[in-house]
Length: 139
Image (cartoon, rainbow, N blue to C red; front, side, top):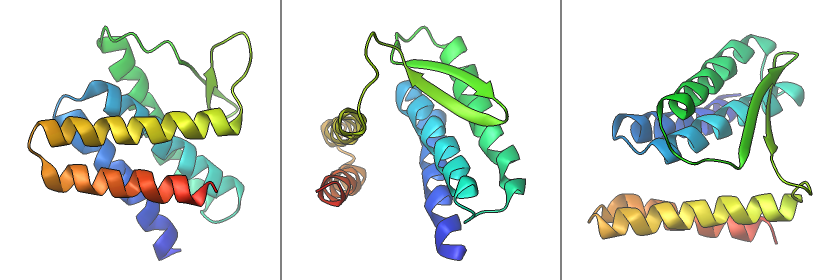
């Protein structure tokens, strides 16, 4: 379980770092991702259900940031249903897993470029590597 814990701990630390640095859109997305990941691991039986409270806190933080910011983030319709995080994509036609994966890859690359432009080369390199690993895992 330590390896599983490390996955969402790394994600949570990244969300918190985005939050602290004022990168609200990235923080909102990252908090949602960590909440979704925790719930997915619970559903698969890889984490105990006691972790659901942590997932709910990350969801709450993403909701708070979304409400406080005036960012146009129309792609998420957030709500809590039966203690599960639901982030529905709002559109006439639901997005496929492939489209959602493409969005995640584009987000990682966009964040990498932003870090590179701000001379945060180490962070940029990590994000480029994450994007590449993610894309390769989808093949």
